[in-house]
Structures are given as structure tokens and as C-alpha cells.
Image (cartoon, rainbow, N blue to C red; front, top):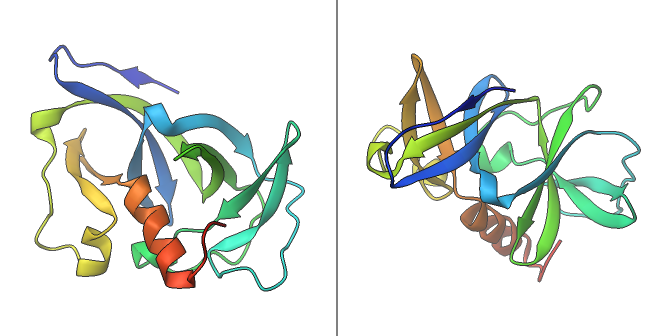
Length: 158
């Protein structure tokens, strides 16, 4: 994993992840761990985004598949998948990802907010996009994404 730093003072660090061939970024301050997904326990009657539960060092957490909230095709196989453990509002969640990329520092003024070509559904869960090494990275707003999942499933929490 590489770390790309910038010299500007107003910047934020992000972890890049890949889901279904697209590159996303998550605020590094929310990332607690990166693991290979194994020993997933299915939960009957769970919302579609909740794949199941895992036990990580004695802490039980839901594993979330966020593809539906990103307008992407749902993953059919969980073999050789990775998971990024996120802390949001004092709760721990695990996000299913295909792979984990680099840590990048993005100057705050370089993020393009609300790209016009994004669907409204996608605009509701992203902060913006960033051009990096001939790639476009979509920056996820994890708080909004989790709120959208909770609201859609009419649950207090996962």
C-alpha cells in the first residue's frame, strides 16, 4: 500500500477501495482495520445490505454490501473479498470491498463536489470526485450512506 502526500495545509487523508471495478475513497479517520472476509454468519430477515455478521477480536459487527446504494450490481460471491472496518457514530461496521488501494492526501479545494453526471441516488452518498493519476476517485460520505441504508430499512441500527 502506497501513501501519497500533498504539501497543501488544508487536506484530508483517504483510503482508496475498489468495488465492482470502480475506485472509491473513504476518510482515513473512519477506518479502523482492513481484513479478509471469512466466517460470515448469515442473519435471517436482515436488510439486503447486511450480508451477515463477523467476529473480529471479540467484537461482533455487521458486514455491509453497499453496491445497491451505489447503483451497482450486487456481488454474488464473497470468496477472496476484503472488508474495511469503519467506525461511524460510535458504531463499528464492516464494508465489503473487492480490494484496498492506497492512502492518498487530497487538498480540500481539489475535490469536485456534486458531479452533474452522477445520478441523484449516487449524489446523495458521495462528497465529490477527485482526479488522481488519470483515474477518477469517488469520495464516499459514509455517514450519509449509513443513514440512507438505515432509513431505507426502517431500522434503528444494523
